Image (tube, rainbow, N blue to C red):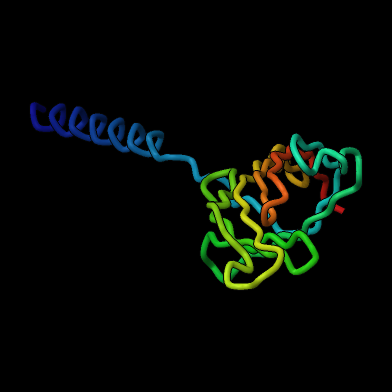
Length: 141
């Protein structure tokens, strides 16, 4: 009888510990899909403020299986960004640095608000024309 009670207690402890372990597993977050073409009205401070209210669109494509994205602003302005959770970080990049025209310095971040809706903040400078900082709400089109 002692052995039977021992086995019942041991089994209940084992079953309880297994149940607790399964409850402690981290939940996997759904994969965020940034890819698509987005559009919205531009709002800037600085040199680009004359474009405030104009329609602005970008196309985001994912490179391979990594967290690397290409952000295409049109006019051959394509920047790279790395996804970190629900944000694409665009570290400072310089285009046309070795050319004699339109040297573009750009950095920013894209935050996913909801599936299909983004907040896009960036800093931008072209040659010696001055700089701008812009904030946009973009919707997938």
